[in-house]
Structures are given as structure tokens and as C-alpha cells.
Length: 186
Image 1: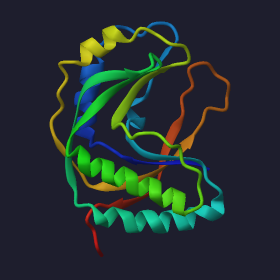
Image 2: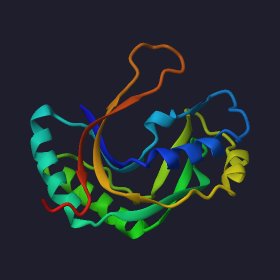
Image 3: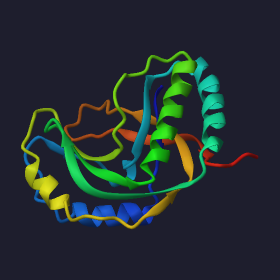
């Protein structure tokens, strides 16, 4: 199964972001908006995880989450990766978010999974394109967006279900597999 870990923003933070996205220019051909129900801040991407690896990965994530106390984050601004992914940024205790991402990545590696070797950049993806696009108008429109701070309380393991129907515009679906509270030593 295709898995990743994430921090899931609360509904009110997603509603604020949704209002900001609603003011953006209409999508050009080839730009696919992500769905609000799937908005998340990825910590570590594991790819296809063998079923027999899941218990070990879960055990390691369950040990990692309590090592970080809940922390404050906010969504805001905008940017893009190579003209192919539009995102909103993350501010607040980004140091704590990075530590959790490092621990989630280490949990995957120690469970025997091959992990990508790339610098962690906290963001929430809003739109994607298969081809490079000029996303400047979208980034500029997001410059003024500053979301209300909220407290991140859980490390979440998420399953990504890729589209299989072949229907144009179909998007991945995400389902929560498990979650572990930050700072919870019970």
C-alpha cells in the first residue's frame, strides 16, 4: 500500500485556506486543483509499503510521536516547485515540524524502506500540473494570505489511493491508517 506521514490541519484552518484559494484566478488548462478533503502537510513519503512492514513502521512512528510536544503552525503565502506544483507555506514552530519529519523519515528507513534524499520543505500542495506552467499569478494572489495559528497535535499515517478509472480529472484519495498524539507518553 502507498503510504506517507502527515500533519493534518484542523477544519477551520482548511476553511480559511479554502476561502483564499477561492479568490485565485481560474485554473488554466492542465492545472489540477487538489481537493480540500485531501489537504495535508507531508512529513515523509514511503511509497509502496509491503503489508508485512506496516507493523514495524507503525511501532516506530508510535515511538516517534511522543518525543515532540504539540506545536503551533499556520498556513500562509504561496510558492511553487518548478512551475508544476502550487503550494501554500507553513510558518510557526517549523523547527518542531522538521524534527517530526526527520523522525518519520528515520522510522521508514529503520523499517527497511528506501527513502528519498531531499531537503524537507514544509508546504501544503494546492495544485499540480504535468507540464511546467507560469504559476506567478497564483503565487502573487496567495502572498497576502496569512492563516490563523493552530496547534498540531497528531502524527498521521495516510494511505494514498491513486486513480484507477482512467476518468480525466480523477484525483487520488487519502485515508487515515493510524495516528499518534504528539507528547502523549501513555
